[in-house]
Structures are given as structure tokens and as C-alpha cells.
Length: 296
Image 1: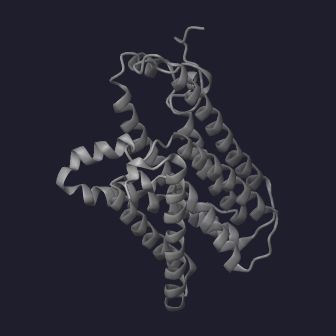
Image 2: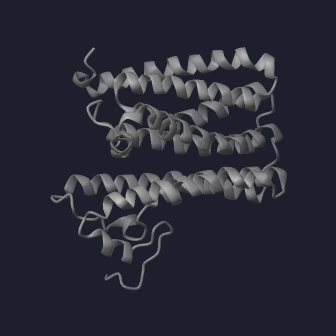
Image 3: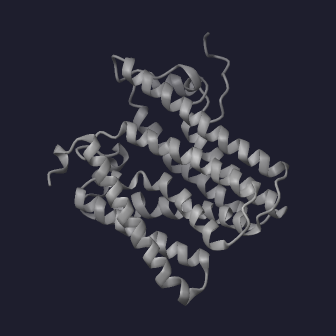
């Protein structure tokens, strides 16, 4: 099969088949491991790692690390639904709000990935950069940096979701704020994606910088939405247990990933554009606000 010649619809079927097989492998792994460990979080973690390895195999076979990209958004709702099913808890408003918030984010992010998917002939530019830098060791950096680290960071966030599920606390103010923050995350990402897509369709020069909509006030509104989602999940945890403990570290790890890896990598790429240095001086990195020297 020549993957480069597949239509977008055909690659969609390929992804669905690959991911369904991956989920089946994960399900079998969980049922094999759980009787021995008798620990839901650890068994799910191992199953998650095995699924990551499966996606890595697909990535290696297709020579395209972007096979992993949907995993970031698809696996959280799958795991959360699985935990709700096996936990035998009574479904209440808190769990419904948590699931709605995750689904809104997951559907939006997966849809945006698919909308921008161009086929197996191209992969995310960041993966190309990692490949260029690591050369003969790319098989290791591909698995570690592109597949494993994101899986670990996302799973840390899901631990808070699991704690919310088993507690099944009544809705309170913190949980409502967490839900609203999750909805805000999906909405701001949807708007930012739509504005960026329209800009890319209209621009005539790729060296220009977007200066419209949310992007006029934040250089990375989509990343702001991503962080808001996981902070929202943590607020569900905080509202459920009413205590400040070690679990606050999990969203901090996600924030660190974006502040010290994702955003710097993106900005290093964009700084080559003549306009971007001025854009940095005029527009906030994350939180939307107008700087004084922005001209109306």
C-alpha cells in the first residue's frame, strides 16, 4: 500500500483502524495486568504505555510521527469513560460535567487536527526538527520526545480526573468554575483555530504575522485554551476533596511543558519572520491583553 497516494478519506479509515486496534491492545493489556496488580491507576498506566508503543509502531511503519497526534486528544475521554464504567460509581452531575468538558475539548482538538491533516507525505514541522537534530538517534527521540513524554504528561492530568470519578462529590462552586474553564478552553481554541485558518487561506505572504481576533491580543490563544482545560480538571479535583495537596503538581507539569518547550520551540521557528519580533513586543504571550504600543 502506497500511503502517499491515499485520499484524505482513505487515510481517515486507516487512522480509525489503527486506533481501534490500539485500543483493543490496551483493553487486553489492562485485563491481563489488573488481576495481578489490583490497582486501576497502575494497570491503566501500563495499558496506556502499551498503546503508545503500538502507535509508535504505526508511526515507524508509516514513517510519519504525526500518527501520534490524535492520541493526545482521543485517549483522555476513552480512559475517563472506562474509569467511570469500572468504578461502579453512581453517575452524578459532577461526573457528567467532567465528561462534557473533556468531550468538548477532545472533539474540537481532534477535528482541528483532521482539518489540517494533509496526508502521510508531511508530518508536524516540530518532528522534522527533532529528526534533523537527532539524526541516527531519531528512533529514540521519536519514541521518547514525540510519543512517550506527551503520554506521561497527559496521564498525570488524568489522575486528577480519576480521583474526581471515585469521589463522585456533589457539585460545588469550584467544580462549576472548573467546568466553565473547560468550556472556555474549547471555545477559545475553536475561535482561535477558525481565525488562524481564515488568515492562512487569505494571506499572500507566508512571512506575515496574524494580527486579528484573539491573535491580536495573545500570541498563543490555542495554548492558553489547552492549559485552561487541565487547570479546569484540577479544579474539579480541588472541589471534590477540598484540600491542597501534591496533585497540584500535575497541572504545573503541563504548564511547564508549554512554557519551556512548546512555546519556545514555536517562537524560535516564527522569529525568522521579519514581523515577528515586533509582534512579540506588541502582543501578550498567553493571557490576552493589549499592550500600550499596539496601534488601533
